[in-house]
Image (cartoon, rainbow, N blue to C red; front, side, top):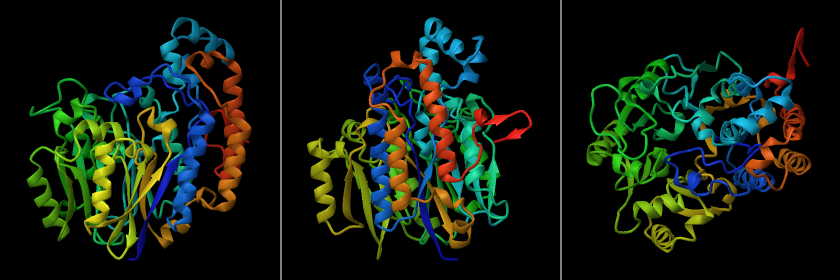
Length: 448
């Protein structure tokens, strides 16, 4: 059945700041304490969405979460009204307030794992919300993520939703950042590659410096609950050495689309076996492996070369969407120029300024959740989330009205910030036509 791949990008939230919460993500920890610009961050993300929509790609928007998460703070013993909760947390546990104010939900590659209907036994698109249990500021996201996805993909005849796996290290699940779907065309049955950092049970290789956030056990559970066929599933272990070098997710060292895999030579354990399995199950894999001599792992981490979007450009060619940081690393930029000249699958490199997100450790691929859809399934998606000229103009105006142009960790103690966020999100849900998806919009006796 004819199908296409849609990208749903996370809209950066009004509390975007540099809290340095993500141990193992060198950009996140390296920029901790600097002042951020939430307005610029949101506008940069919107510019990328609009540019890809203008190129003809189906582009959707996923709204941010409510932050600070006041109810989370109440659960840690802070009482009183909302302003009193925030003030007390700022005095007694500023790190907790910072974590509960993180705008990290913008990196929707971690929101869920998605299997398209061509791959699943019941013929529906399956979503499994990621538990993100390895990091506190992200482990509080899954309930809102589930509400948002269920509001956008609401038709049960087309879409199946699964809750987060158990909050236990054995089932650490980081969503689509460790999952790549390959197929000859989007409507064909594909091969879903699940990449894990370590096995929780049974031993084996594991990183020593930074945590492996995705387990084999979690990946296997997602494949089972989605009803994937054995012939359409492959597992690979991420190289522990690259995790210890700052490659906290597979999408920082590899990206794939259709029958093309673009990856670093250091990405996987026993990489030749991984390539051979994908080639056999797919019926032909086009591999672009970047040698260490051309791009070091450090260059890959600093530039986010592989945290790129690989987009179908037609006739077997691909566009590669990269952050501006790739231009700033001579080895990376030289490699990309050679890639364009070699006549391979990549025919165009598109560069976008995502500096605000990059300084917190998230590039183009972190900001988007990929969903392969048939036209019938696309028609069942909540229509107000599709990017177009009018929506871009409306969201740009919304950001400029509601977002601050400077935010530091100290500013999180301002109780007015929560009011600003709720006012903005209330308007946003009406703008996107999503209804009351946030708890603050609900009141006794119904919803407004």
